[in-house]
Amino acid sequence: MTVVQDTAHDITEDSAPPGAPAPAELPDQPRRIGGATRSGVLALCGAALSGLSAAVLLFGQLAPFSGLLGFTVTAYLAFLACYAVLTGLEEDGQAVRDRVMTVVLWTAATLLFLTLALVVGFTAWRGHQALGHLNFLTEDMQSTGPLDPLNHGGIAHAMLGTLIQMTIALTITVPLGLACAVYLNQIPGRFSRFVRTIVEAMTALPSIVAGLMVYAIWILSLGMQKSGLAAGFAISVMMLPIVIRAADVVLRLVPGTLTEAAEALGAPRWRTVWHVVLPTSRSGLATAVILGTARGIGETSPVLLTAGYIAAINANPTEGPMISLPLAVFTLVKSPEPAYIARGFGAAAVLMALVLVLFAIARVIGGRGPGQLSRRQARRAALASRRDVDRFAELHAPALSLFDSVPQTTDPYATPSRPTTEDLGHKPGETD
Image 1 (cartoon, rainbow, N blue to C red):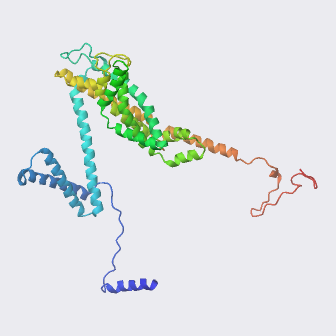
Image 2 (image 1 turned 135 degrees about the horizontal axis):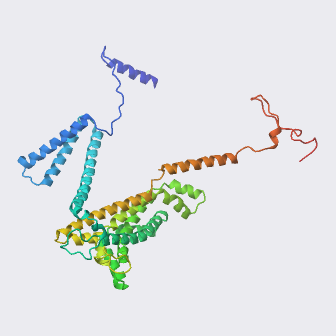
């Protein structure tokens, strides 16, 4: 094999022209993944101008196209094509695909952020007239007519109704949803697959169907009256599949080595779930509850069917109609009076703020992710570790023994001798 390598080396050297310099070895340079470069920025700007120019030519002179949406889509597609060509002049195919997908993802994120900002800004702008009055948050609409100014009436009854209904729904949904998710994750089988299929089907359940079910069972069959309790039942039906599905996905992400280690130490299944699985996935479970809350707090039709409408404050969820913020928004906005429309948009802004507050509370309860400790938790863990080290040192510390009186030699390389009976304090012939 050495002869073959030497021969190939000689052939390579002989094939080079005499006097030519030896080919220099190109150093390996890793491809830059992130960060803006001068050539990248120039390529992005040039592609944007090229895409805009191509769309102007197609919609203005070359083709009989029209419409703002078509113009935008055509300009964006032309921009992507030009950007891919300009990037391909300096990069390989993998880098071109990476740059193009990065631009697509940034575009999607920007559109999503702009849409959210537009919705929030438009709602706050239309409702700022009502939000500027303190009575809007402290009074109800019992003695307020359509022609009354904004300094009369408010949405205190709707805010209280929303909080009561969501409290009832969360009280029902959180334990049932988390228990069902634990069952689907820890006890696989035919019945668990059937339950998972039903849960996935219920995620697409229309809200009006949930309201009709509670209305037929609770009000028509059992003879109960419309109340906040019935609305809480209907909202919990809508929240339950969302919480179960999201919690099931989170519990699947818990490493199996943690549960195996707990079971290897002799812990039963329920203790493993309670002390290992649930604490590890606490932040993810809080996110699951947040998703369910976001689904239930904006429901209107189930509340209209099961709780009815009232313009006064009703703090009793078991008796009498009770309104919520989404139903108040629907009722106020459909009115032709400008004051009612302003109150409706103000109620929508309050609803968004309430959702934001509930999300913040859920994130605080959820805490940090597994392995992420706060400063206080880190200090407590360090103190516990030091206490464990001291305790282990006390357990393994050398105690007094019979060999303490054995004379030690000063030679470090000498072999220790076995103690005799005289060293142990016995006379010859005596036994212990």
